[in-house]
Length: 450
Image 1 (cartoon, rainbow, N blue to C red):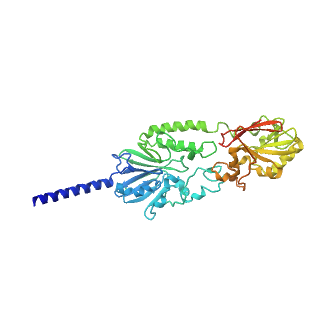
Image 2: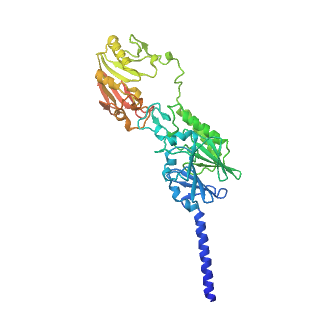
Image 3: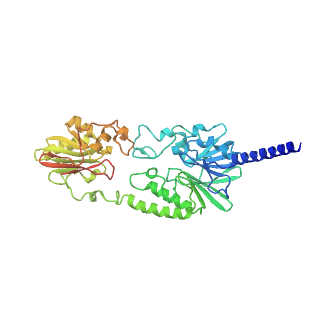
């Protein structure tokens, strides 16, 4: 009997040890989960897919900060979590929330920044199939919002300066826009340490997560200025650990934020328009051309004419050869009646007999809105650089600022009669005209040399 009892005792102990090992495995992170500070914060975990998803654990319940593609939900049992009670989104970008359909919304609730509530709940009002210049969160039609593909109902909109309470955690909410229009940072303070979930504000290495999400206007730096203010507000929090949406945890946030702020300020100096666009008086904007007998038309050289300084924002110039043939350089942002008045005046006073072609300097619609009128009424051919042509012909294939289709007048593209190669030249009325690709204001621009 003694050997039998010994064997049974051994088996019992072995089973007990194995059960204990399995229990430990159920609450120990696997390769999929990481812990940024396991000693100080044993209930804080990171899961990474389309973004970093942060898990706050309390017993077998959890709160998630961002959701990513939702794959974390299939692995929570590995850290002993049976149910998710809340998901807090830092911002609306699709990579943060594309797994939303995997949530059981009957038991799992969602909170997000109040400033972005509409971006979650009414996404089609912001990322439009047919954009226009005045769309919210767009640069002349090119949206810098990246909302979910379907509406996400927000159970609790979160406001800056207030706290979100969950199972003994007090999560402070701080507006930190810049990476997105209304993104929010969540702060937790325990054991004398401050941890911040910062969304896309910063990437480890004192870098931007991505530049394009912060380009909010046409070279005036609104997005950068907003991001700098958010960085400054985070510096004031004296953080010990920063957990961003992308990349590794930031273990030295104070020094990185200081460096980041300096980098952004230096970048701003290079990016923001370096001249006073709206400060000069109308008569100071053009000191070279002279008035002519044609209203609103000034003369630059014996053969080159342009709109006068009284027409800021409108685009039109023309070369008239000795034989009376015309080559128009851009035409847009003024009425057809004004175009007709100008052409009648040029015929009467400057000897214009016919318009051979009109040249499109770059892809922005305001430079060829009058293209169809010039083609149909005056028989002009449309010329531009080959890499610009398809942006003029098929603008809805692209997601760029100031496409002609965004101007809202039904102009959805126009045939280019002659697309020029980069460096190509032609003879026209005694002029040798060379065309060169000239990016800058846009990638799709060109220069005409005479």
